[in-house]
Each structure stands twice: as structure tokens, then as C-alpha cells.
Image (cartoon, rainbow, N blue to C red; front, side):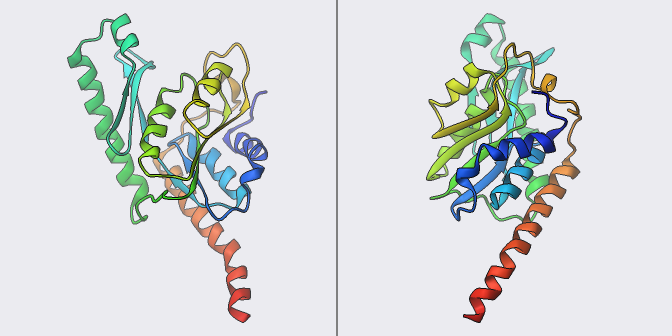
Length: 228
């Protein structure tokens, strides 16, 4: 299946997540940048709050699409030693890439969170959403970091990923929902008609819209409860 764009992908993914709809304990986390428009549609359909969780892939110098690891909020670092050894990467190269990505991770956290309260997942069901997963390195780093926040359950959800990647993530997360697992799989972008880059401004706008829309949906219920 080819998704027209991330909006269509998010709506299709939400149909696979209906068992989580309308639950007070659920929170949807978008992986920026591309995962946030998908997560926005999921949160809207599930009537759940939307937040953001930052993960940065550690790309091989000169071949950045090839990951040798990832970092995530909370000081989590996942390193694939077999990839590093196969490509003869030096410790200095690894640390240079990690330092640059750490700087970008912190910048994005400041950009997206602004006055938002610190993320609190204690006792909640967290649904981590990305627009597609290839190797799973970034998502694995996110899972390890999110576990430190003591969620009741951790769900990974994506419109598209290789079957082997989805199977591997099922050993780490409480639930994994891959709307499509096509083969052969060469890259996430091949399954989107529009896979244009998402800006920081779009991420911030979607987070604000999600918060406003959720308040609008909850307000009538609050008024009814007050009248009782």
C-alpha cells in the first residue's frame, strides 16, 4: 500500500489501534519530526493527549541513512557494535557523531516542549508513533528510555515497517502495531506519495492543535459533571 501522505497513514494506523480509544490512561507520543503528523491523527481518533519524544539516529559518516545506533531523551544510547566493527569506525568518529546528535536532541526538546509540562508516563499506556521504521535502532533507543519512566504499558505503532523489524520490536514492547509490512523494503519513503520533510514549526503547531482539540472535546463532559 502507498499512503498519500502522513495524514492518510495516521488515519489508517488509528484503525488498527481502536482497542486503545477513549481510555483515560493512554497517551500518544510522536517521534519528531515525521512521526508527529501521524501521531496527531492517531491521538485525534483515539481521543488521547499527544506529546513528543525525541530520538536521534547515529548515522555512519558519509552514509548517514545507515545507523550504527541511536540516542534518546534521558541519556539513553544504543550502539550496534557489529556495525561499527564491520565498517571500521573509530571511537573518535562514534563520539563525534554522538556529540552532534546530542546537541540536536537537546535543541529539539527545547523547541518542542516550550512551557509544556515534563513528560509523565508513570502508570500510563504510552503509544510511540513514527511514520515508518526501517532497522528499528531509533525505536529501540526510545523503548529503553521510555521504560525508565515507568509506563504501565508501552506500545509501538507505525504505518509501515519490515516484518522482521516488527517481530524484533515485539520482544521489547508490550504491543507492536505495524499497519503494513511489505516486502521488499528499501526505505520508508517508498511507501508514501508525499514524504516531504516536516519542519519544527509544523511539529509545534500540531502539538498545540492537539492540546486545544482535546480540551474542546472534554469541555462538554466537564460542564455536564458540574451540573450534576
